[in-house]
Structure formats: C-alpha cells, structure tokens
Image (cartoon, rainbow, N blue to C red; front, side, top):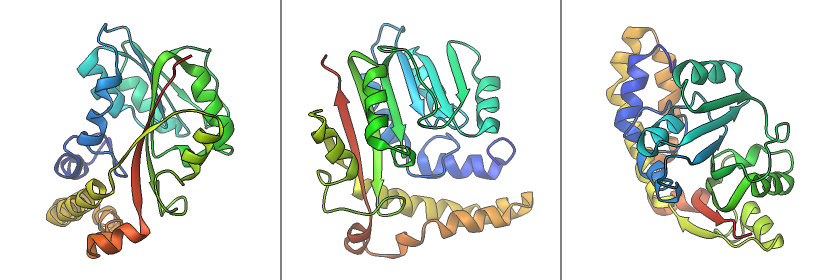
Length: 238
C-alpha cells in the first residue's frame, strides 16, 4: 500500500503533514521535535528502531545531512528503504533484542512506538544507552492504553520506571492532547478520501483506517482516561 496507493499517500499528507507511510501517531510536529537534538555538522548518525520503509529517516536526513541507520522486522520495508535511500544510509532486517551495534555509534536514537515490542525493555534500554555516544540523545514517543496498559501518569509508565531504576534522567512531555487532535484529522482525512481509496480497489484499507480512529468519537476527557501519549528524552552524559 505504501508503495502503490496514491490515496494512502494523500491520507498521510492530510492527516500527518507528510507522507512517512504512517500507521500510528507520528505526525510532522512530533518528528520535528527530534531535529533540535541532531548535531548540525552533517556528520551525525541517527538510528531509528522499527524504521519501516525509512521515510521518516529520509526526512531527517534531508533536514540535517545526517547519516541514517534503521532496522525493522519487515524485510519488505527494509528492501524499500534500501532502494529509496542509497546515500549515507544503512538498513537492516532485524528484531529488537536480536541486533547489536558498536558502543558509542549514534548521536540520536529514535523509537516511535516501538519500545513496547522489546522482549525485555530493561535489557533493551541498556543496549540503547550503550549504542549512544556521550552527549547523545534517546528520543521516544510512547503511548499507553493500547499495546501496553495505561498507568497513572508519565512517571509511572513501564519505561519511566525502568529509567529511574537505572538512575537515567529523562525529560518528558505529555502530548496526549496532540494525539487526540491527530486522531480527529485521521478520521476526517480517511472519510474524505474514501472514494479515492475505493477507485483504487482499496476500500477495505480505508475502512480499516476509519476503524482505527474510533476513539475520536469520544470527548477528550473520556479519551484521556483510556489513552495517554508521552515524549521521553534521555541525554547520555557519560
């Protein structure tokens, strides 16, 4: 779909602001938050955990001139990333917990809704901190209430508890309201493009996109009781 559907491309652009082949909540506003942590010498190295077809990394590379690295469980996604981004890039097919990089390789490591899939999140956090350079940044968007249960607040999430247990300082921003507003945009975009999807023979895909936005039918105060979304930022000081 990401490679062949013009309707899906239009959906991503309308809902998220850019076509990164999104199937979640990472719109351009969230991705642009990463830019401030990328060194400006055009030598930076960025790793994306669960990079999909690499479009988000390509966007960051275009903005900063960074070298981009990514891994994903999907061989098809990695093949697409390799074919699309051939310069200053390295993409690997692998799963969390089954891949390693040399210590101190990356200036920035990004996880957009992928930490939950680590067989051992605490052990994987150790890998991430090892892979970061001194002064490097770990940036993760982390949602509660779907893949992982919702806890009381940003400091009670599984990830936050792991970081504190390891004495790793983090800064956190609650972006739950942003995510709710994005859900409304996703619903509006999918409905407006339904005919275009159907003309492609992809009506079922559009129906799935609309079904994914069922929480948009609830008032925000009800939504936030069930779902929460946070950005955690960790700087490696030593």
